[in-house]
Image (cartoon, rainbow, N blue to C red; front, side, top):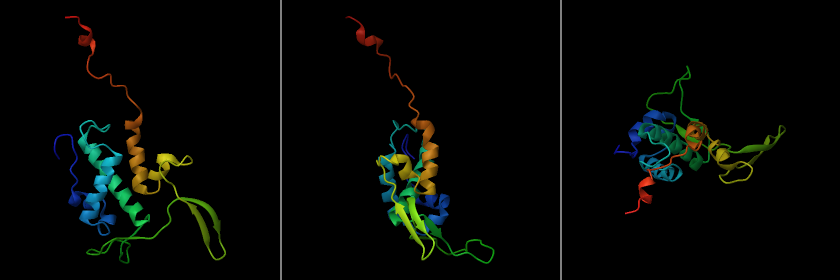
Length: 163
């Protein structure tokens, strides 16, 4: 990490999100990180000034974007008889349902889903993040930074001095 800026490290990210690491390549993760920097400023002027905290938030954003891109919230990894992941196997992101269930039927199983999109008057940004467990965690963790603290900036009194 350079001063005030998070540099994405795929190896670290894989360690934090092992269930996704087999389904997300280094190139894909790097591209998703660049997209995440549009959602959360990656400069010393970010609302999240602590680089360690911002790095943790970026990890969640990359995971959230990866799941959304795959069109799924289901992650499967082969498991042994005890339910533990089998060493050397990779996780896969499989097709799943994302959105608010609007209708359901039991006979011949039918489910209607309305997508949650950013900017939607019904769901807004929170709904977009709540489409995945990673996005929901990010949304909960970013809340303290969104409460709008007043920062008066540098003292402007010298500006009014008459030469």
